[in-house]
Picture: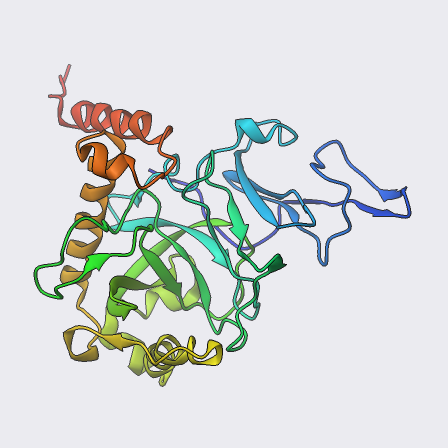
Length: 315
């Protein structure tokens, strides 16, 4: 459980640029000397997000605060190593930001690569951007969740999209790439994307001033009129700029209530546990997902649950 206050304030900043072989600025924390379009090396409690600045693709790796960020092999998996639950008492979750509000680079957790860095897609040898426009909200994922592509949703009749649950974070400002914050979940939208269920969890930064005013999906329209409509229309239309048809939604396009949303999250967490503990067998293994860190994370979760349920002796 976190007892710290997450903010988007930068606690430390370092970057490096190289021009014609001459280093203009450098620090011991630098992974690459490629000039980046903006300052990418940022530290947020309790994690450090570092971009390696590779030319062929951009990757953001997440490290423990005390880790050596020059050693990519020591990075954490944002999918497996970061706990889903932030505060059981407050009912909040951890969120990994992949795409900052107002940007276009299509960044996402690389589920098939070691340590699952956040990576920009490459298509036809070029870095992939969102063609429909800039992302109108912060967009990322819930760690330790998985939409199982082997399992048909009994209500929606489709299988999962083989990724962690997506999150639409609606606070007013952009969150940095790779930042890990505590969020308050408000609702969920069932996007049906090219024959797969692709849930969009709607949430707000738990430490945003908006969080005190938002407790469920119904509050969003009262406090932020038009936002729910904008979210729905973005996901309906964003692929049309690539020549694809409009997306559709389940549950009559309604935003699910809080209890139903938490049930979706609990189900995706249970599927993640089945995946990383090997309960799904060869069919899941054939998907090629990198889950090496997952089994240890699931064991740690089990150990913590046992410790929490142990009787306390009062002296």
